[in-house]
View 1 (spheres, rainbow, N blue to C red):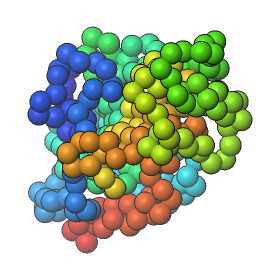
View 2: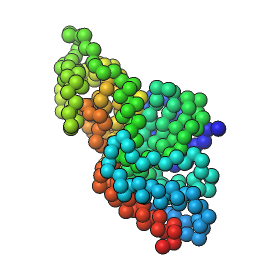
View 3: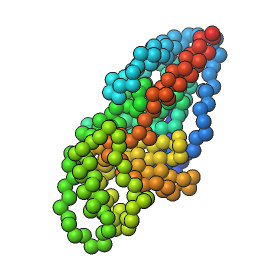
View 4: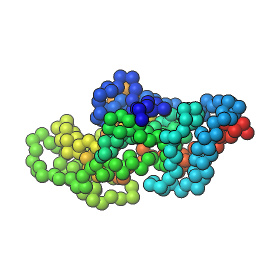
Length: 287
């Protein structure tokens, strides 16, 4: 199977990006987005023959009605076998939403993930390490589980901190000690360390970046201001950064949690998406 472009543009890849750059931390930030806009849909008589696409949407609606928000078990629909016309209708219906993600799995496969305009409805493309398309699917959930599952298996369970006196440091070592302790005491809510409020000098931040390392999962949001959520080499430790319109950092934090809440579609999002999806489906049926 030959490599195919992502049918819905993945927001992390855009003009000026470096095609050869594989480092998640250097992917361009998503552009700004305004508010929900219902996709421009064809007339019912134009798609009367596209029964396969409409069957996928009907099944998605049915499964969403009984979905209870489980983070690991949720509706998944394989689109790999659909022909071009049916897939194009689904592309047109789903559109492009506020959040995108990329995951580099240990087996070399890459997941490119794009939220649709219906929050909590995700399009996931899986490619091999040589760029071959392996799977194309829809996942309905707060966020596709492999974003945090693969980050977990990629990272280390403990922080090994042997240094006690490093020249030039102010607060990096106490912060890292706090991170190491909280990793072992994962709570129901995230433990947040805000570097924007701490006296951290450049040496501190360089040392911290080196100690945390770079993980294999990145989430990019443009919903409430630009935000980048990056896994680290430590389990359940994420770098979360918020940016202004000039891509300057407004808020720089570490969150110790399974996955930061800013990356997730909420229960209310999914309820709203179900209602809007039903409206779009009725339009396609001409009802």
